[in-house]
Length: 327
Image (cartoon, rainbow, N blue to C red):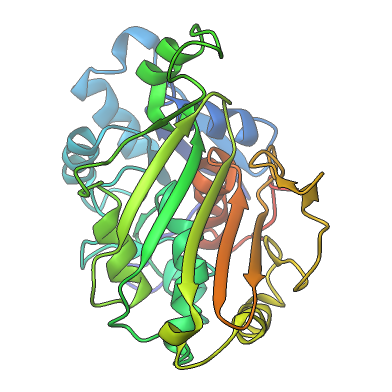
């Protein structure tokens, strides 16, 4: 029996769910559309190219959708969410709602109860690409008391240029790799990157981290790096940090904690940020000694960092196997 107000899926065809990717022409939208194209349990609703910005055409599709995935700029995503209202469920891949109290943060591995929250949510904000690695490294340490919520944290990150969207891709894919400044470009030097609030709030920290990202000459791939001293961890050392992360994620399909001291992720003593590309995997690594600790997360900014997370959230919200379309 269906309770009053309970939304049902697949009313148009048995076991089928109508999904509309609003912003399918963007980088994340294209990745999503490609990965969802072969799904037998979904019907992907489409809008004519010349109607992508026609509000009346989009509103008509919203009413047909069981779930809409917003792959739009922040302001456009906020406006679309208002127009959608309670017509259907929503996953927002923009930054617009990631710290909004009425939206559920869509990082399933964040806490032991996050999946349940996502499963019961009508509005889910997909996490940012940079924050995911940071959060999955930092939050367990704060929750277990290894790292104080008052600790001043510093984070450096590398990303492929696809993370900058179509404008950056168009500019950088045509730039020779030997062009001055092309191999890597540091940005966010005003120390107010739009992901910082998300990183602070969802980590449980009471302090905004210093976050310095760098865009590189490769198309996709990402690393997040956090350096700590044992003195900042109440005397805990690198192996303690590793044990904490291993215990937290030992049953996770997509988060893999590399054995402590293993050289397996390295190639000729170098860590390649492209090592998880084309997968939804995130590798977490702990390096260090009795005094210093270095944490690294490596993943694909377009998959686990964007489209892959959206697919995880989609599957969870629909009550389906989280891994469908991701392995």
